[in-house]
Image (cartoon, rainbow, N blue to C red; front, top):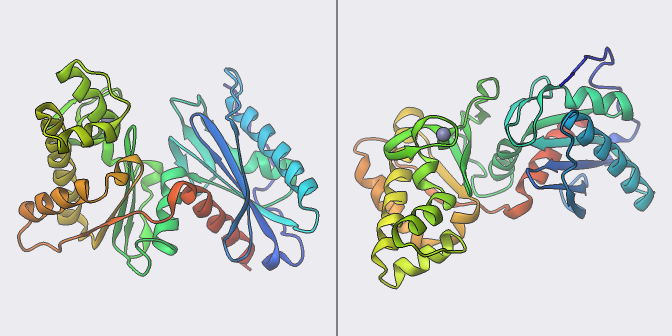
Length: 322
Ligand SMILES: [Zn+2]
């Protein structure tokens, strides 16, 4: 795919009265593209969801075109709410400093300069960040980990990804930090990423459903059904859930020992299991540690729109930077 550079600077001068301006926030997902307007207080309005535009040859351009269309649609729908910046997020490897989508296996781009392209067309300042990183920032600034500085926000769904905060700053690692789901754990299986033993092959909601079906021969809707079956005494379900808890506890223990993590915030589909997950996980983490700082395990609070909220916070940061 071509990603010829343009020479337009990434950040144009913001329009006047930017502090009261709204921010357009866009979450480019593997299936859906979500968008909303965010006001100066961070509240979302007019949350919309459309299919993520796909293009084999120009996947980045297709997303940029859709984002520009959305900007125009929101301006028409909300004429008295001027939009002063755009905050975009996406999965995969993201260079947030340059606003570049480094790689997305699912969506198909490589080294695509999203922030620069959208800025060149709209003239607005644009941020382009990582979806889980943005959700993590929302949890740290407004949600479950508010006021804490050494935090890991883990999103456990089909896979597992994390946002890591040390001393109040998110660790970026050039876009490579936070791939907790693709770090080896005891008992881990062959992973779709090509490595052997990744946490998400055992500890994710996707793995719980898949491993239960493999063992029992019974198809299930998802991990929540397996958790229910485990409560009802189904042996295969209980084993699979125990394996997941052990794998997650291993990773949390490693993080706590390495980073001195104060709190691990768990979000995504599996977090909805509540105490059925949190209680055994707390005990397993406790058993794995001795003198270490014991991280609190907290449920994410920002909900499904955490990424949109985090993206809006970053974009608003551009407006508020003199
Ligand atoms: Zn992997």
